[in-house]
Image (cartoon, rainbow, N blue to C red; front, side, top):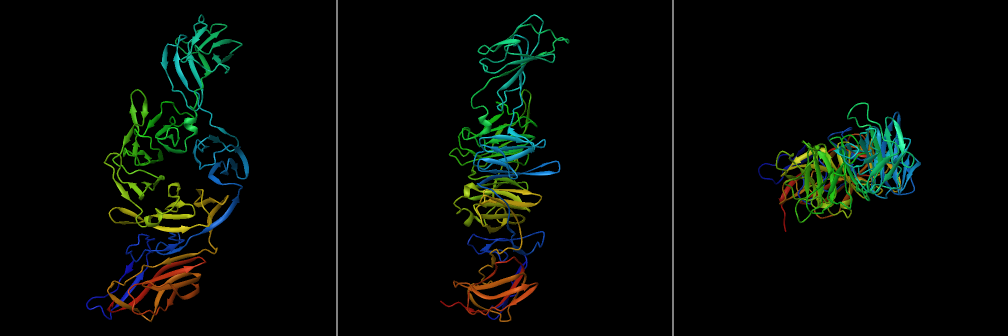
Length: 569
């Protein structure tokens, strides 16, 4: 809480007491901030595992492993009792320090785990790794049609963008040798095979192929099935369609929703999203895609939440930037995900995330939140008023990294970290977050969290944020305070103030009005309360600063001042 003390009646001579014992983040808005907030703080945070009221120095970066190039992705993958640390470094992929794949895209990568297989996307590759072998995802071979020897029948499965291979099921009759496929101009350089009653027949030995007409001719007519109407002839062939696989390989965004993987970020299809079949990340139908709006503004993020998949696009003149998809059962196509334009026109210029069921993204005004679900008209709420004055000036704002850790959303831009606290919120026009601010020793290129430990990659190395005994500059400044009477001069109580502080070495500074900070004292081995003497007269506003180069904590502070006469000009 923060208290003002008593100052009723004529103010002159009255004693005003300031006490703060619940801290609430930073305020970079240059406004008249709350006593609990700091207009200038560095490398401090509220560690809820230690103390929910006070603030303390953040942990420091501790070296885990060094590499020889920029790290674009860090993924932890458990197989049995073994945890694999997968590192995308430069154009190589490592398991620990062993190179397992070369030819990676030197750009930020993403991953997901399905059926205990690790899948990795980097904008040119779509890989799968089982802890022993890694290779490009081998697409599930679809059975595209079922019919008779003439090809009459039904279309069965769609073409899979991830493989040029297809199967056709046909019925033998013991007489017909020529079988028609469901497509023409198949690959002539592929060895077509057919399986009949468990026996494989091969092109050039048991059958001939007319690739242009899409016809297969057997040397011996396949027999009729034992069961009437059973499809006993399975023909495997290949038809390569240029750039089919690249529709997925070139995607840079992915998210899992409704047991499917959704892909986007392909520069050739900037406003399109694709999705896999249910519970099969190796199968992406050539028909399972959606164009988000009529304009080509690129998709910046896909977020699963509030019973929908939210698709966020860059701002455009069409003002159609936020779309959502929710599952619908279609009588002909089964489950589909039609695209619906939301009522929000503000675009996403960076990225977004589901932060504890709060769908948030970053516009050119800061962090925004979608505050209604798909059954109501969506509205936009702002979430970053306390830091916009600094955040929006970051040169690399549009290339931020988002990571959730210890109940915080970390917004990382180069070496700067803005922390939104999910447990500290306040209401202005909308519900907003309290924020903290850090500066790291290196620019960060990617992050990961494993077993509650935050890993930060930068300077060609992996670091864990676990070091608690390093020299690290951290400070907390109080509000530039007029002690509730801006029109009166004040004098500090010479008996001093108190603070509950922990740490080996803490310095306290003070400034009045437009003067510079002056050091009051340095306190060593502080284990509880300290008393500081501040002797300042005839000031309008006063500000304190608690600072240290070694870890410290601030749980509360007090200061008393007497109200004097009117300010003279």
